[in-house]
Image 1 (cartoon, rainbow, N blue to C red):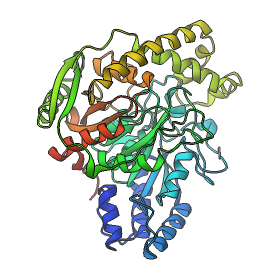
Image 2: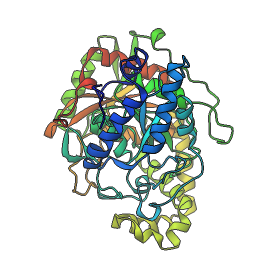
Image 3: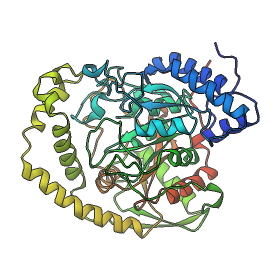
Length: 468
């Protein structure tokens, strides 16, 4: 049993301050989060594998180093969790799917290794939708752990596909987590669970050692309790990787002390609140009032292009290639969701000209949205049109053609960065969220704007009532 009295909901920056004041130790923090993962994490279906042996070893090393005066930076000694599509040496990487339950890889994924070098302590592999949802699942239970739950209301689903990461951060089970996004899988669970989630520019973080779903759309990024924490984590993992040909050479450095605090120019797409729930609309309007305190807000019209159709076509075409052998071998029948088994066969029937047409349209989308985003510091909208979906119910109706989700599809096609932060609560006591989207490599600006918002609001420091 842990003996520390440290608040498990503290931010990375706050936990780091405690470590440096010797008010707690890496080993005490690690035991705290291991215990919470092993109890609350299992209750919320957020945990796949507890990496206890590795965690205690890394925590002991961090403790020795900090005691000796060796400080690797703000993540040194901070326990964290990895979405279970990221390889971790010595532990299974299940991809959330029963056929891969025992799968292991030699060595750590790039992002996992970068966090190890930064002194962070890996305490668990976190739940996800099977194969990151690429085969078109219909049930929140499409995972070997079942549907990960929202800590604010455990009858709700934490969202796909980085569901365990969103749930674990919101419940104070880890100091921070990594997720991945192809078309919403960082910002969706971040919004559903009331945390901050950052989707980096495509290529900003190497995907080496991560499951491929869509080679040209996959991104890896931080899921944290604050936008500031997202900046700290991104700085540790955003490095050029010479073995990943999509890895960018554009440097990223996080300097919050010198960041802008006012004078931002925000743009709201004219259809941003079309087909959204009433509470989502009201909370977005209130968030715009806050943005007016440190910037200007104007309305813009998105270029008329088939964002959703292009995104879906590219993803379906690329996952068919990635998992062709898995599908044709018949192993796909071992997946949990019946829709995944049926959709897999349809993917292989996609004509090449359909994928190539989507690739051509993608060029127009990338140019148009990049140009629009470049005229502002951020495009802002509700992150999702609805609060978290009820667990146990089919999710087909959840993904509406709302303006918010249309924008989400488009910016993922274009590889643009985005940051979701909580901005209130709606139906069934569940969080709603505000999305900031920027031009390529504008993560620092997005974090600065989100920081300014969070300095004026307290949604990100609220906590669910899970503990006795």
